[in-house]
Length: 320
Ligand code: MTE
Image (cartoon, rainbow, N blue to C red; front, side, top):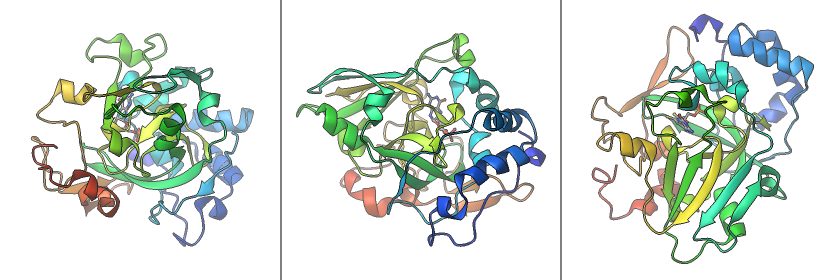
């Protein structure tokens, strides 16, 4: 999307003192979006908001949120990677409305006590939704701050009961080419696959996300349910999940299968280990119009205090 269509970032004045929803009531976000809608997806979104009010999710604040100011709804929903809808950054916002996200089912199988096919409602029933404002760093070298809504993956894994032999968690995205135009090209090994080691999956920072800015997650960001692992490069955070499998062996993952020398299984944000084709030492903060900010990239994307212990004794140049 051309920069001139992107509204100025929404940055409230007193980060950390109030929740973002206290600063700006949900109705104002909807109105703001309707007002600011300039073109394409933003226009469609404004029309949708006018015709059909967007429900507000019941959400509590989390001490695990960063106090950095989140990027605007427009910035988070118009510049995306979701190859199922095309490889351009604006393709998901223009095309993902074709995805049917209800009804939605997730198969949970492998090394679990209660395997089965669970509806979206069963998965989210009774869970306390939290707003988690997280830093997000893409392996391509850009970053932003996002107010996700979700709950810890550990809550779901505890509910289905992880068997003692399980060591990894594999995730799979929906494969539905009739609604996902990118899947009608055979340039990619669909479906998109990702995986985490079990201790990473059980970490309190690892969440399943079903909302953004306290509203249901927009399709282009991975509706109705996706993974977010804030200390890893964004490609680990798989969208529109339909299968979660507990395994003993490390599962195959899409980018690692395609280009193993470029994309590792761990994919921890690490400014000291460059991608073979570019440095990872700094990142471009999205937004900012003609004068984008570059900032140093932080080890584990700034979450080192919470996660570094997971990798003690590992050579992160080998296990990149
Ligand atoms: N999940 C699926 N199914 N397909 C994708 O193409 N792209 C990944 C990740 N999850 C992707 C995906 C990449 S490369 C990034 S950076 C993030 O989603 C982008 O998430 P966002 O668009 O919500 O910022």
